[in-house]
Length: 579
Image (tube, rainbow, N blue to C red; front, side, top):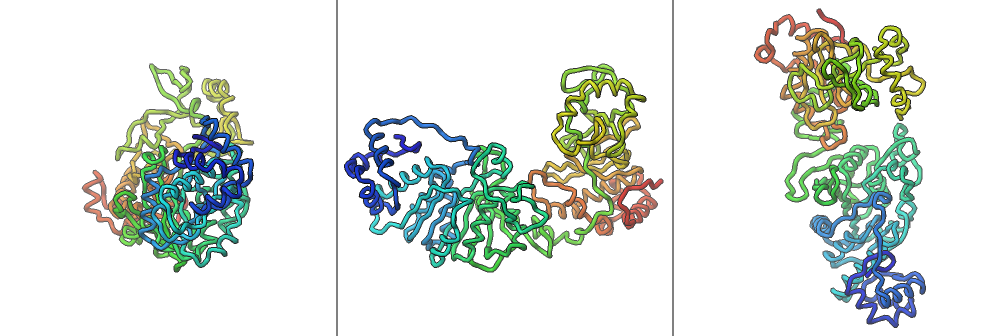
């Protein structure tokens, strides 16, 4: 049966049918329910009791589900909720106070209540009122089926978690052994804001970071992270445990900023789940479990939720934030500053027009058009998916390169390349629709990620999107340098042997282990410029053997080796011609 937009199980329906007369006085009904289940103020007024009474008589079962996106709502199935509660309670059994700040349909609360015997107080908070009712009905059904002499005091509160007075709740429960459990929204503030959701926190600089504009409205942050930090702010001195299902990026962020917060949390664990199986979404997520009221901890053990097999320990080590302490310990000597400036590839945000194919001597685009262009401004283009081979000497796509440096006037195209200009101008509406503010006030057909470095004939490149840290050596094709798109990073060289040495060095076991130690593979873009700029080429080069390199690089001479050694000692911000 459905009432208040919530499902009511047969046991609860039977209870209210048996006690229908009690519904005529909601206060008496509340007392009866309180005695059985511990739930306070089940009905807020007589109108609610009357509505339930009417539903029982008419057996109205029509209901609709809410828009889950508006609440960042991925309800936890009961099986997973029970496993999470079981694991949390195995770490800390004598829980007296149970809190879920975004309780949804109540599965976590119910799972913890079923497995705990010493609870004194339970609080669930939920913004969506039908879920408040569903949680109440579920808990009532549990206690109707499993009668207890002593029941905890239970409050299921209809409220916005971002406006709830947690300070008052924390003070009233400070002496109770605590378990904070749940699954907060897996969305960012911008995602909720884009659909006018009310489920947003007030603006404040919650990270205490002048450079991080998150809550000021200038940046983007994760709602689950905000709620986690809110819990630590008010409850980190409670004796107990925190157990949230969150995106792994939230765990990483919390541990990373812990050096600034110094919350009294420690012995942290990240237990990775299969989010596709559990929630039908492709995102790296897991159970973030940490102990409260202990010396501040700055590392986290990562393991599998289902097998408990550990994979790594990440966090702060030797004054650096790393993914694998073990791997970093063996390769920390490479953590410094790159002798080369890593660049991202070309950014244009106009793939339908700018990215081309070739068919029977004509250029083609994604719009299905065929046309003629002068060849001078057309270059080969590689994307992340093209960087799988060790050496790349061909390309699938081509791109029109309208500028040689950012901001260059593009009027020259009309005079020198009339076919290209007519093609670009006929598609100007596509360029005008580009949303990024970087194109405002710039010349027509502007691109970014372009400079002298883009035209280096040899490049050593890596994808920023994949877990792999394999580097590819990109050769020029038909005498022209090949471009990379903005999902890739590269360093450029004018001489093949210098590029080959850099390629060999970057794919060496020690550099690969170093990258493994600092890259969080579950990130949206695991490889970043900041990561690559930490590779100390000089330190890595010192640990390579010339004889071994000779076996991998045909024609490598001692002169090439010595020139590369001098090159990486040069404190330069650009790559320069060597021969």
